Length: 164
Length: 217
Image (cartoon, rainbow over all chains, first blue to last red; front, side, top):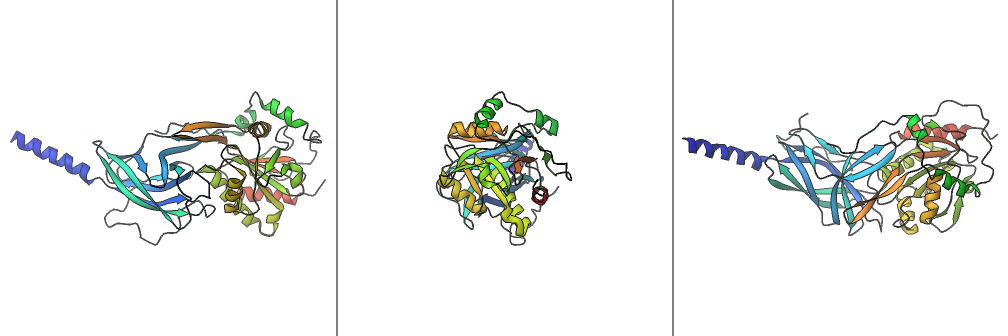
């Protein structure tokens, strides 16, 4: 009986991490010009359970980091952070003026209308890692400070609407 | 969790921010900037959305090189309102946001757009080559000008404007911390207004319109 209880507890725990998913919305990357070597990616993340964004990978960049921008006495400071905690059901925005994914050592210019593959690496509450692939459309440099307008409902999955 | 403390910065704090070498830079530039010593005697107009720094003893001008290799000083833009911003191209956030806003301001100015000259001064002359600066400006607006110079020249101009910038290593490369203020000059080349990064295009446009509306002395 005791063994059964432990087994079912383990099963529940295992089930919990296996099911953690993160909804990724409105991902976009700022375009670059010819010899520009760095840019930023932005998006909204809503996890089904507490999770942490710990890394991002992309074939277009030699180095990808998670950064925070802050203004301190009108001085812009940008720093790598080791990870970004995401609370269950809450939407965390990576947007200009806050967090962003820093793409460095770009291997090619990023043109408006293209899309950039990103692999988001998350840790769930039990430190298990899971990944999610995103194709982030490029907003041409000078084409605004937001993602290109999305098709209505394009990124909404049934039963995954975010809660506040 | 955010490890950078966000500090609301009151005007007083900003105005009192000084760096030891400001005066060295100011002195170095002083010889290049004749006729900037007389205080402005204009009566105060309606309040600016930004901070009115009319008569400030700094930000009197610059001597740099544009992306076409031509030497430039503030006098080259006399007759127009100049908006000056310091930044760098490998910047994912504030610099493109500021330039996007500057392009929006030009749109808002409509028929008066040609009366505004937007100038971007790189604080990263090592990586921001003239070609890169030209391409980068063109992506926002064909009229935007970018200036560069030797590291010493950039330092002197930044000091003259009390602009802070610093290389910060990250990964295999570096990023730049830098002051993200925009400086407005009136048509006669006097520094008048400082606007903060958090302010809207509407705020910028209002202050530029106010400067454009001033009658020459």
